[in-house]
Amino acid sequence: MKGEIAPMSAPIWHDVRGADLLLRLRIQPRASREGIDGVRDGRLRVRVSSPPVDGAANDRVIRMLAQVLDVPRSSITLTRGEKSRDKDLTVHGVAARASELVARLGAPQQ
Image (cartoon, rainbow, N blue to C red; front, side, top):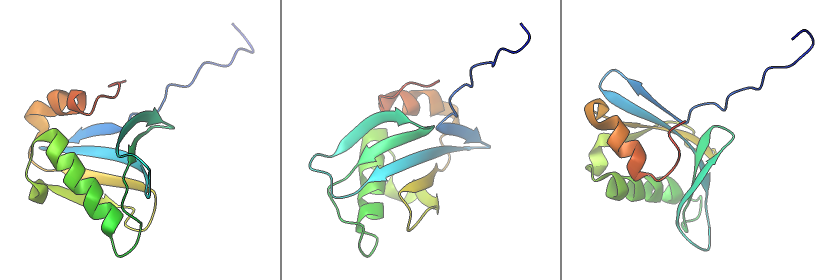
């Protein structure tokens, strides 16, 4: 109908690129409890208790995701947002089981 605004779909917080899985995250450092806290504004929200000092929060996020996804820490790299709350992480070589890994994160796949 003329004049109607179509609803925008939420940006997807994950993407498969070649053999890799890209995750778009929003980090909350110094949280009182750690864990994955759903999706907001197209990013998976992750709470960590580590402070954002000397890369401690980044390291904790990578360790947490490696444990949840059951992949080696060395297969996860921070590709964007080293000093920002908004980060992009790449999980290398897991595209074949991307759906399973996204499900493990406990957030909607969109």
